[in-house]
Image 1 (cartoon, rainbow, N blue to C red):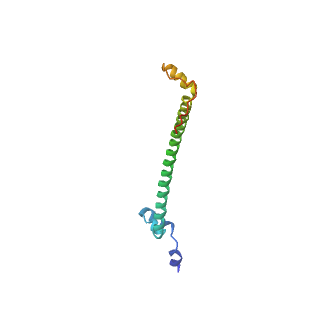
Image 2: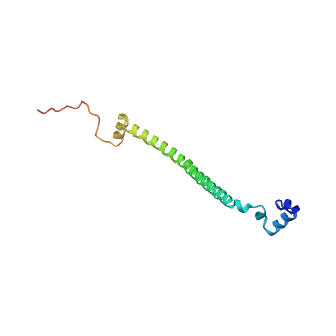
Image 3: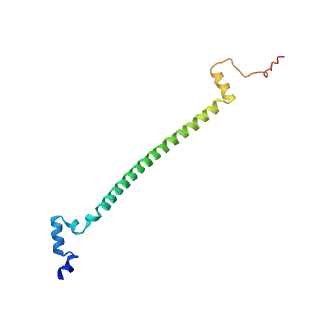
Length: 115
């Protein structure tokens, strides 16, 4: 009878002996849960990999935000230059600087009608 009560429980001597011999996992019956432990280990690695890839993507997004801001400013400057170059007064100044004979018309254009 006495052996039956100690059979389900491990004594301190048995635990120390199993730790030293490397059989502690078998004593604790962890071998039954080994597939679950491996599955959790794989899930942990997947989690680490996904977090790393998300972090890399966020770094690219931040870098691209800076590039986009640069191109927005460049676009605004070029649009301003384009609008500024199309003004009549600026066109006259550019023609005068180039010593061109082209000037603004003195009388309006005539529409030619043909019958």
